[in-house]
Length: 310
Ligand code: NAP
Ligand code: GLV
Image 1 (cartoon, protein in one colour):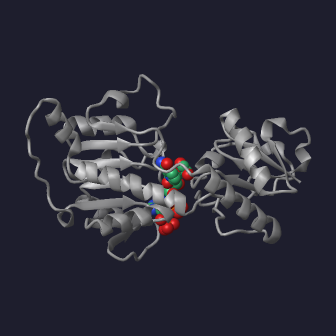
Image 2: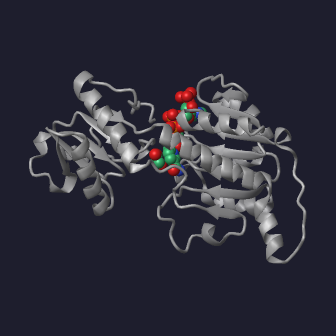
Image 3: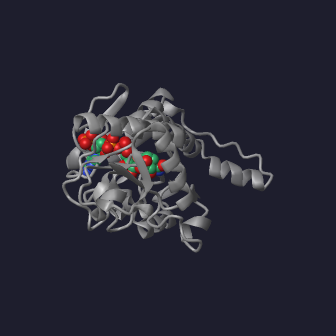
């Protein structure tokens, strides 16, 4: 019974193979590209597998995403449709996202980009901003990460609202759901944080129409997936002043191409998909526990729902 491991960087694959072998003694763990008997593979542990990678294994029972999102697995047009997917989540991933969201919301709230521009000109320019309860932050997606981020922002005192597919109740957070809820949610969001999964219904959701429904001068933080954002619509909204600043952690193509306009735009902060990378040692332990549970019971707490896309 073989576990096939694949990450885009060969040295990372080797590292994960060795780590999982240590955590799952008695299991046969191998780099996907080294597998000589595809019929023996029952489990795959992957980040951004290549199209056709999973279809090579006729007896595959489960695919583990090394991360919270499963869009990178579902993107494979040859993916065997009936193989369940486990995602990798946990306190470590949630904590890192809470830190990232708090950092960048506070940066936008306190207008740090403008403050730093003033410093560059030796300009003693005191920027006075509203106190947090008078600043409304909206979080799109209230799952594992979005709900934790919203609670963190509410804990900092912000007027916090959140939007999800189904109705939610979160202490200190005003919640909205569904298409109607989005129309009521957007007009107050001075800083918008995207933590939706990338699915057919959320692809391109950060577009001109949505930006137009935010208050003029809103800020946008995208820490979910590059596919949520229509790049040219953001550039146009920044140009018109409808959006004041944006922080982007994720992109259509990663690494972000060197000549992309986002790199040098004065109102955009680019981070290289680091909002919440799972700590490899913690992730390894979570994956080993999930694989053991799945092998024993046919399920585990972190099963994704491939049909709905997250
Ligand atoms: P999750 O637990 O699956 O939660 C997803 C949330 O989005 C749920 O609240 C869901 O609503 C909502 N949602 C889904 N489709 C929707 C729609 N069409 N309309 C409105 N709401 C919708 O996901 P998570 O673990 O919080 O992760 C979210 C995403 O963050 C991941 O998919 C990944 O892309 C991204 N991520 C990025 C990084 C990074 O470093 N940048 C790290 C980790 C994850 P319901 O609850 O009603 O279903
Ligand atoms: C990272 O982007 C993840 O999906 O965990």
